[in-house]
Image (tube, rainbow, N blue to C red; front, side):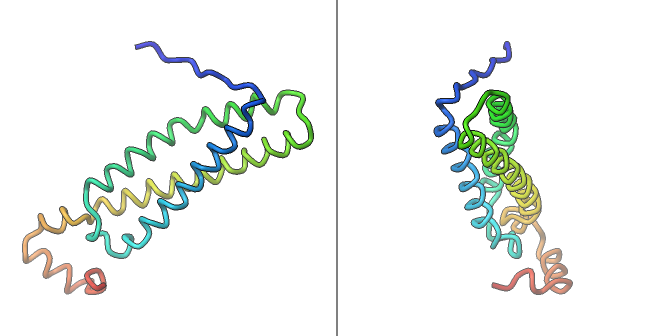
Length: 140
């Protein structure tokens, strides 16, 4: 299958791209806050959720270069002061988005090691030993 070429957008699409980038960052921040409570108690989350988060954010991570390239192309143009400020702001948003996506993927990887399915697959002896070694892991 031939790799599809991106359709670069004219500068008139800056507000649309800004809305998209801001929305992706907002969603990533929200997703992180949703997953964060499970960090202390990964057994409250299931494999499906971890796998879905991993798939979605890995795909998003692979596509972020498109937005970086679009912003870089616009920044080479003759821009008004407001347009230049917005392109620079969006470049900063992209840095934050990359950081959030990386943190989410790292957290999903950690959570994947202790999902409810992983706990249920352990023997009573394994669970008992884990409880004795780290009792806080199983507290609410």
